[in-house]
Length: 556
Image (cartoon, rainbow, N blue to C red; front, top):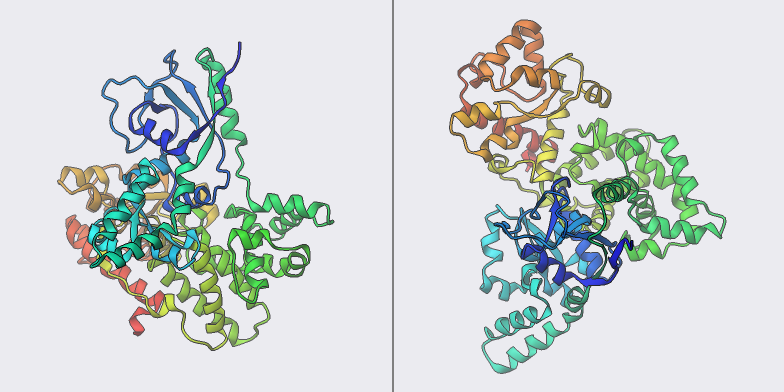
């Protein structure tokens, strides 16, 4: 029996059309889609640069071996029998399908003016949450034509749709000469569009005679052994013959700074940090990292690793990010580590001043959502500006221009990852107590007591009151609660379950507990009357004051 039907490459646009048409689906045992927008953008950048993005594995659905479902966001099958089940590639295909078909929780755009100005593709792609008001502006054709903003969804049917869009944009010009000039300019960025249009994934299709047991074994192996190839592996191979063992150096770094392992840091970040601190013109883009030579790595490695260790400890101890789950942007670790590497020689009061400035920059970056796109370019900019600021220079742009509308918190659910995670971390900065043991929350307490993110006004309770899902799930109605307490809470009113906790803890500890989670504890607390709207107002105001404090916004 031949296990494989074929191993031919397939065009990306063909694969996405098959998902949209219900020809390609997922076996129902696959996990849900979990990628965040930055991971999607990284994949699109790789495709635009024609880098390998891994292979896909699917099986012909002749035997109906498994129950199946549509890709997230794809049209309902409505009785249609699919042709293929995807075994490996769900996250990549889902992210690309949603990005190019303009569905899901984010919309993706290309700033063509940046490409015309010879900026990199990664500096030109960006995303906006689908529930944001500015979506209407970016989806307005006149605005697109004026700012040269191309919705990625235009490209779902190929580069021909880009040409049609360009002609439509050009027709808005006042005269024939201006129209021709604009068309010629936009033709200049056609190569990036064409690369996406021509991109092919290696696709392995298992034959329809492959049994269920074999499929399950293959799937289990893929999920156990799948490893992303990164420039770290490429440079490890290159330097091996130059007597520089990068893998051993990384293992030594993790042993010296266990917090690196706590945050599951990609070793590639170490080389990005080296690239930032080693260059007169800082950069941590892939191309620059791949151009590092042995002497540069050896010269700056120790400082980079020490900076990384200090940055992660700072994030954990000063910023309230007790576990990697609550780190708003993993990419912000790179510039922060490089900044700490540059401050290693500071002494006396200068150390405290530097930490205060790093802290303010961190929170401005989180609530300003500076790392939503072009993270490598933002890293280089911030590294230069923050280090100069620490040494007496001007306030960085990300701090100087920071503004925040607290009403956003009412619309922030776990889907808006950066602001949501940042807010949970901001709460945890107050050395929040565990609801069950009353100990200060630490990584160990979180793991031992199964502490997780839970509703304060229980979801089922609010549903019975007719509260909308978005308000029920907004970050204002969440904090970290242990499993035992969450079981106790169930779907009870806050006035009920909190009174039980108060009687068990006593008034003093009960007040300390609520205060440590930025929850109202006084006699006029909205918990007493189960007043959800008043609670939201109170917590929005309280959290906004904390945001003003950590960002310096109240000083403006």
